[in-house]
Length: 157
Image 1: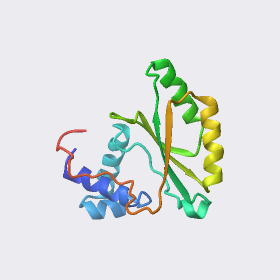
Image 2: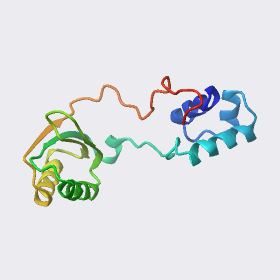
Image 3: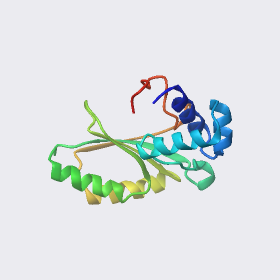
Image 4: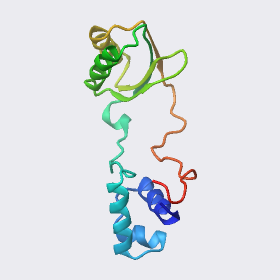
């Protein structure tokens, strides 16, 4: 990966609907080599998807809830059951296993507190959890899906 690839990635992170000729102009290439580079970045898995970002408020998803989960079960069987349960909930848009005092963190989007309560009840019906703590986001101050590209090492993918 070189500086041109990084510029291509920056363009696509900013607007994945850009036509190849526009990206090529922005990075200083002609269309064919630019397209070849994009194809290579996709085949190598650097570009994992091109998606549309939706406005949650316009979709009646005004509440973001961060759910901190602690468990006293650390077996792979329990994790498999928990991960399978979480995968079944479209309200969960992010799911992480953490180090430290919290074992797992979920980001859940729902219309309101009542919808979250229904989600919560469905979740605890499916999986044994030692402790679950919910924090409702009051305001989104920064949000981006763009990854920082300053750390990309030349020649590495």
